[in-house]
Length: 74
Image (cartoon, rainbow, N blue to C red; front, top):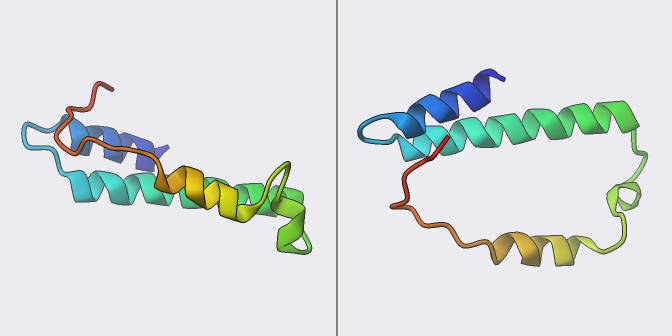
């Protein structure tokens, strides 16, 4: 939760700290993924793929468009 709070504070600044906010977002995602892996205890990567393949997931992530000038509304 501290990472989400940090990202929110960084983005709400008069001059948003985008790099710091992205770092906090990445940290939050990494911690959530580690918790997921710890809970499910997969034995191989194939166990993590549900209804698709990894290349489809990567393509979907790459296609996300972000406006770096947009203000955070959180």
